[in-house]
Image (cartoon, rainbow over all chains, first blue to last red):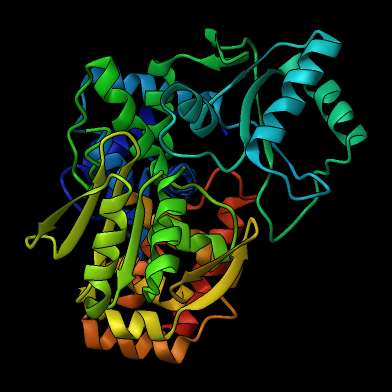
Amino acid sequence: MKNLDDLEFSILFYLQEGVQSIRVLSSLVGVPTSTMYRRIGELEQRGWVKVRNREISLSEKAVLLLKQKFEIIVGVIHVEQQMLDKILLKGSQPKGWEHQVEVIVEISKSEGLDYAVAAETAAYLHTGYQTPSACISYVLERDKKIWIQFLKKRWYEQNFEGEMADIVLLSVRSIPQNISVNGVQCVSRKRVFLEGLSLMGRGLLDSLVISNSLGEKIFLTVPEELTNVVA
Amino acid sequence: MSLLNDFLLACQKSNVKYALVGAWALIQITRYRTTHDVDAAVLKTDLWKLKEALEEIGYFYLHNPRLGKHEFKHTEKGDIDVYTETIGGVPIEQLIGRASTIVFEGRNLRCVSPEDLILVKLAAGRERDKTDIAVILYYLIEKLDWHYLNEEAKKLNIKLGEGLINSVERLPITVINPHKVRKKLTERINDLSES
């Protein structure tokens, strides 16, 4: 999947005015309906629009993001792009997220491969608030096959259905800026903040927790709150 | 010791009937994301016993009538939120009555049923609730008691189908082929839900 382009920004712009049909959107943006179907499909996959009974509307994620500062919107679009190329792996035995992080750190040390844990994993290492469900980590695109090879040697597999991954590798051209937190390379708080907004769900809670330390304000358009200990 | 341990020990010591709700109740399905906080349904008649047991180990009690909950706060550990009337409109007796026991890390935990967890999370409607519902549906869609879900949703005036379809848009990043899974779940929700 590619990054959002001018046509997709036009679609989002018109949807801010309310629910539209494919036909009306095609005419407003000036593209054939076949192109519009394809683009709406892509926007839906990325969680920006909702399609219900042939009517297109902005998703809750889009409504929330479009209320934020320009800097945040641009940041979310950027990190979302870098999280598109994913490799999901499942271990042979049920072990917690801490074990998965240890595996990534060990392979990195033994093979000299760069990484930076991201999203929910980095959020927990930075805040200690919401436990992660897996180890999510950026790896270099050029090292992707080596990572998979070493993880398979440790009995991780790629083809599993009906379960959730233990390790998610996000393949990127360059590893985002990172720092060591308890011996684990983590992306910055700012990046975790943006990743949470991109992922929504429990990611929004990660972003809210981190927004306190960053001094960022999230304009909420959906119900969410923090417990007193954090707030 | 964690909030969950403190709560479980207090319930055990004082013979308090409870059922965990919130993220901890997801433990019966999979180990997903949780905060330190504990949310639980407790019979009204047992509240004073729980209060005594938790105050003994450093918690202070606050009644929050606006949110219909009893809060046990610990300055370092966090909050244990206890409900004694209803959660999301579902009566506490019903939640406790339909709860089941699971073994987690060597301890017995009483958790509300997956159907009740869906109902209380639909009523709460926060982003985190949507992801939790998506996780339940991902693992259990064919095993849920849809008759119960449909009947209770009607009583609570919850648009079940719409709420569940909205929730599956929040499948976690750890799910393979999320678009395909979402489509499949949406089709099944349309088949199984009546509202």
